[in-house]
Image (cartoon, rainbow, N blue to C red):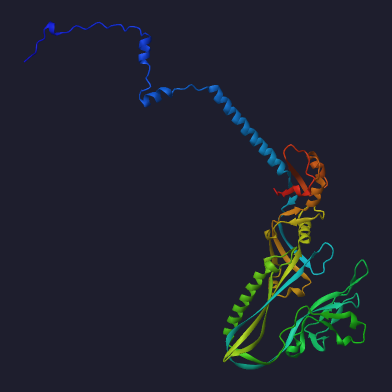
Length: 435
């Protein structure tokens, strides 16, 4: 059913009354009382006014203090770490080397000299023996025969006798000994030749250590004192007695294994035993092998013994570098130089069989070198430091004028405000850079 409304039921809107102004009594009534709720009081008291200018002043002060701490610390560090760092760029060349060279045991001026480093190793191994046999063998070796008798060559016939300690040896082939020469001082430089010799009789007593020999056929003659010979290494091979019989295949296998073992042990010794100040090349090593007499080990067993001798030519570092520079660098005039890494060069004997020969008997070594070594000119670093003591930084170029091996240099002096090098040589550091 629809509801109907009468006009009397509608209540007219009342006019809005204006609020009367508050008097003092009303103000007092509106002020929070002490008994107001605690949270409402806290909210009323949390409003404060911040002075922005004062906050900015404090931040600026902190920044200034930090700045002076950093600057002061840097100055103090520079003072404590004062010194000079000199970066040097020396003169250098990288020639392309691919040529044959010779080295001499007794060189003349401008020739390359070499020395021999010798290392030896012995080892043994047991193999099966099938019996024994009677063996008679003559010792063998090499002699250096000298001629101080005359300036003309002298010829020795086959089987010419040489004597040492009452034991006689004979040369295998005829030999012609060069005549002597004289140096600028008038000293005699004997002619020399290498000859292979063998013992006049069998026996181990002929396995002589390095000795001096005379020629008994010249006894009582002037030649006796001025024609002589020397052995550099022990003669070997002399034997007279029973020797074990060993199957050849088994013997060769055991010998090769033992020789390889000894060979590797010698190669491992090179780094520790190479003399300081010398250059050597791994490809230049030579090996000679000697089988020593077998001895009894037990029933049907024999102990074979092997000796391996390794020889390596050595070259003095400054002499070798100067020799290579003279041969490969145009305009080189004999200045002091060094090679930074000799492994940049590949060494190869001109005659392949040299690596299996006794190079101690050779007067000349023939070899090839190939590669691009870095040849650097040398300078006296200690003298350079001394010349710079207490000198102005601007004087660096004039000081370098006395060091042609240095192409240019740069200096950094600490602290940064100093203009002179230190007065203490220990405070100058040289850093070398090869561009």
